[in-house]
Amino acid sequence: MWTAVRYRWTAAREQRRRWTAQRERCKDGQVPEAAQVEDPGPPANGFSLLPWLLMGMGACSNLFQGDTPNPWIGGLGLLTFNSLYVYVAFRSFVKVAREATSTRVALVLMGLVTYGLALGYGGNWLLFLPLFGLATGAVLRGPQLRTLGTAVAVLAGAVSCVHDGWGGLTIAYATWISTMVTAAILSLSEAVRELRAAREELARRAVEKERLRFSRDLHDLLGHTLSVIVVKSEAARRLAPRDMDAALSQVTDIEAVGRQALTEIREAVTGYREGSLATELDRARSALTAAGVEPSVSRSGPPPQPQTAALLGWVVREAVTNVVRHSGATRCRITVSGTPEQVRLTVTDNGTGTSSATATATATATATGDCCTPGGGTGLTGLRERLATAGGSLTAGPGPQGGFTVTAELPMTADDSSDGGHSNGSGKPGGRADTAPYAATAHSLAP
Image 1 (cartoon, rainbow, N blue to C red):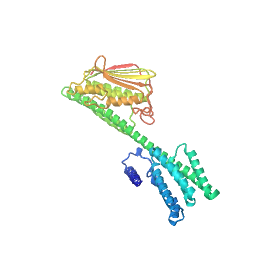
Image 2: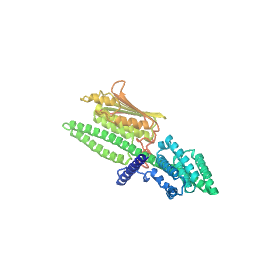
Image 3: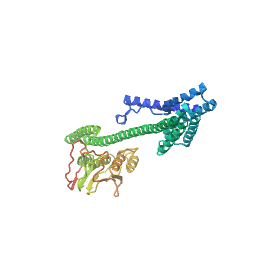
Image 4: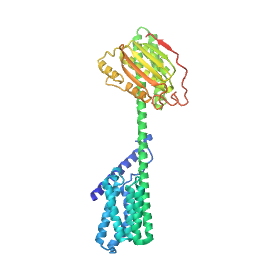
């Protein structure tokens, strides 16, 4: 028994140490603010029920003063009761242990000892009956508590009436109250802790989701922008020896792209980045033209909702970035077609892949849905997750006529819970999305 008590004492100290460390981390700001909840205090354990054993001091005093007949039997009963009470008290705070057969058997044995001592001695020994009710309430917190708790109280009243007459009703009432109140308090405390743990878990998941959204935004923003800057810088270097005006035009574009990237990064940091499909298509034409790829863009059908348009803008950005960086293509066709129920975006090139030593690794990463970088990335994988959250899909792989094809399909109204769009569609509070219908257009620009 004492080994079990030492074990429980050590476990309680370790649990309190973890609670103290968590509280200190919250105070020092090491835990994200969104994941912090109000301090629930140290966790409850069996030690909170031990002070009630002081109710048995009167019976113990009777033993030492010689007022109890057969003191050896009384002393053995007192030791047995205390041992069983400590055992049940500590196991009642762990659900698995509380519902174990051994705990129920210990509770039954404690009841037999309690009623035997109360019936045999009376007087101060009757106070063990409310103690037994307390232990019963700590262990039995289910639907059977009302029936068993009432039975324990009625039996306690019957035993008490043998010694005190109608005064035994006081013991019956005290037993019933201790049973019900203990069960109610411990059940409420357990429910509150479970709710706080659930809130903390939800807060942590929200933080993780926001970090994932932010990492995706930075990947898409910087990957596309830096690719455009590199392509235009190469074009400026090639044009500088023979056409300085054209080279300066490319440098001007580089400056504009850099400034726009700074603006987009600031907006992404604050969580209000505006996704515009039309803007992304214009940027795609410019980037493809600078890379020597002939762009062809066609749009038809009704316009998608702002959340859907924002997601399609991300697909255009990632797909065109991969065409510019890895495909070796000379033509790229972007098609947006929609129906009242669904919108489809297709980006197709006639490329043959990279010609560097990393061509195989790049093609493999592309075919498996990763961003087209040696060793695998997160571009198309992240887009798949975004579109899946909004109820859509994304496929990527070699086209039937060669080259590479990326196809995205989304419902006309994407789920607001996806991280590609925002509540009002414009990405900013109070923003208004353009709802003018798309005209069927086709653009073809020579490099």
